[in-house]
Length: 207
Image (tube, rainbow, N blue to C red; front, side, top):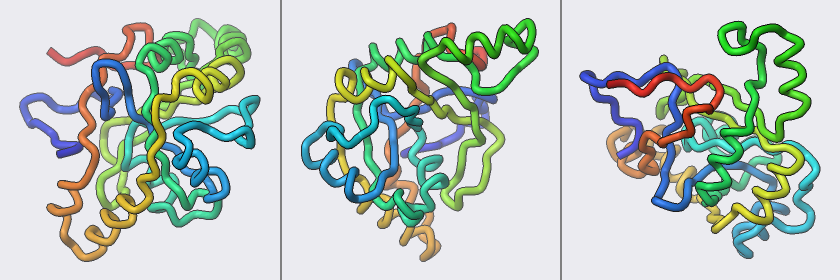
């Protein structure tokens, strides 16, 4: 079951939670059918997928549902679960810069701007969401990939792509019916991910 909370071990302010195996981690993106359907069919991103543009990946299924409105927003009607190589994911985290200036992390704004210009990945920590897409007290990862990271994501790191739009619609229908227990049971199992210690903005691991 996803997003369970243990009162003895409350969620830290910022932690990556994801469906992952020993070798892969699953992230989510939403696309128009013209791109999402062939990507899921072929298990890789088609040539039409713009490798020179920044792309944002989300390990949180419910944050993806918040972003795409349960796969109802224009050009976000197909939700993809993209299973990628953990080595690549960790490389992106280790080479990332926060998308905003944080005086607790950066010595000054100029240093942050320099890192931002030269980093192939960006990190945002946004409030995690519940089944009703309301914000929770702890935050979830959004990882932006550009340049080398974007190309490697599409052509090297991607292991499998699944269309999980039917799952999104089914969970949404259960939420609207008020059957939150059944909806929760269908959520992907997202466990704490052992991110590299140098991941920007990561909270210390709780004891």
